[in-house]
Length: 447
Image 1 (tube, rainbow, N blue to C red):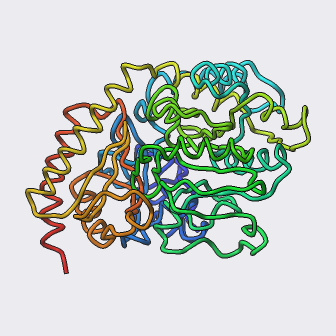
Image 2 (cartoon, rainbow, N blue to C red):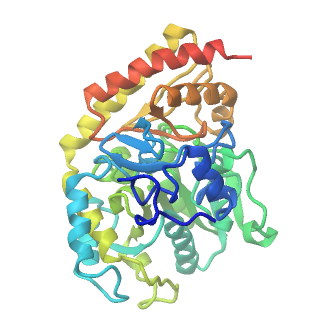
């Protein structure tokens, strides 16, 4: 096995030791093949694979602003943005300075820190429903903790989820999930025993279910961003709130994507509906791994050490991620979100115009700062059944054509398109030029 770069033995002068294999800079294919010999499938998150679009993934060497570079030196405009975690732009100087400063004081203590307190206060001050906040290490951990907390608080077992919503890799919540599960073409996942989902009820999105007193919680993406981008229809979120109140169930908003992405107070502020619990991730880590659950004091204090619902994590609230999160939130205000919403609308319009000019059937719905894409000419979807009408093969053709033009989109037809502060008008114009050529190629390559 070739070792990582040893400058004294390297055949390439002045190489990047992070990229170099010791015998010069490898290609994307060479790097991926080597990864596949150490990592199952060559990826550490299944949605990074190109299974649904075909081919092999590029391997990222670095990123800055709205762009990233692969190990071969190819530059791409990045519309993935770490699936929404990056909002200020890659390697933003405020974030890198905060991380560097925090790292000089140590990376983990296993003890309380001032930064975790300040980040909790920042979330509490911005999201009215979050009277208390508990940190963890991922959005998946946040959603699984929220469900355990709701069950412990109510003394009930049943959880209601919505077809096409994705709440991370938690056994009880993987039934009929969107995003990565939909991208891979599987209804759930192997390895989950029947008992793990026996108390999970899956219902259609945008339809208020009738609940009973066995239901502990309803967990929902207030803006569905894992089956493209689907807005809640009028009355849906309000109906969930009323139905949960009627039977004493806990209403959980999964704002791992929408939280601090669509506005200061998240989707709940935009739609004026207050959940009992909210899960966060992505933006609150400034690009570093983090998750959080926030909510009503009496529910949150059911967590240990005050209550009987256990939660712990050695790295939860670690000083590096909380420093990055504080730096990110301090940059985000109402003017920023207005700018992001404007750029989202402009991007959707540019992409739509490019596809229409080439005769490539696609629609680009916008919900706040989020952009979706559906390769389908009918009505925009309101549920997962509608979202699944998208032509995945057409998306794959467009995806690869855009990649060849230097624009990186998510390798799956059910992900959102993310714009950030680094996507200036010049960058959007660059995307539009690429999209005109890519759409024409996608049409020409149709079977």
